[in-house]
Image (cartoon, rainbow, N blue to C red; front, top):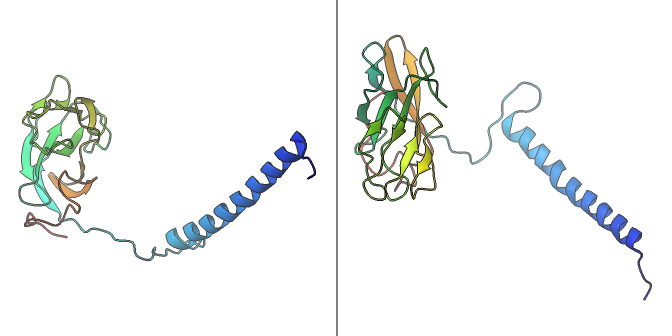
Length: 190
């Protein structure tokens, strides 16, 4: 059996890696081009993609919203408690003139307990009464303390005139495989 030098072994490994990369990158680029646009400015839809249509629900008025005074409401389903807060400083995913209005689920991502309070001095929601998890609302609902391993689901908010609307949810709400199934939808328009 002929021996292979270290240099030949390395060259063979590099050549094999290059062939494998081309076999992955080229089909991936074709699939991406076909799935998200044709490269000529026209759109194309990805086969089998599912897009949820959330209700558009008015949750508060911009003029009545006060810093540090949370607004509690259900969205998108009855029983899915959420909080809308004017934080007083810009936040990830924030909206409004100052980028400081955010909405989050009040259902803890650890075991589904309801987060009872907003603590304005720290801009956090919690601690959770079950295992004391606290979530940072400035940084997208990220866990700041406790057992949870996932960020809180954040609401998509839209402002039209003086009205603040919830229009969607980013991430799954604890206990739901689909944020829109399992209970009655909260009223609104689609």
